[in-house]
Length: 56
Image (cartoon, rainbow, N blue to C red; front, side):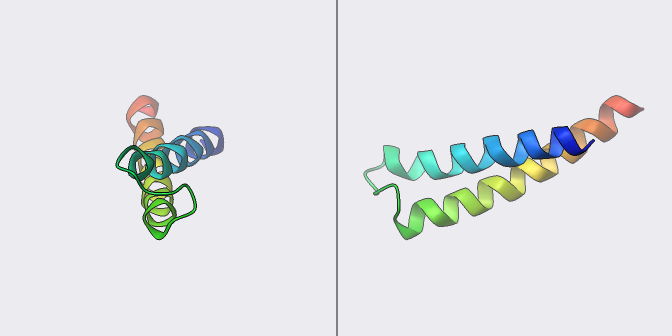
C-alpha cells in the first residue's frame, strides 16, 4: 500500500509541476509549486483508491 501511495505522490507532483510549465510558467513559479502540491495530493488519493479497489 505504501509503495502505491508513494508512486502516486511522486507522479502527481511531477505532472502537477509540469503542466504550468507547458503554459509558459517557470519551473519554480508559484503556479508550478501549487500544481506540484495539488498533483501530489491527487496522486496520494489515486494510489490509496487503487490499492483499495484492487484489494477487494
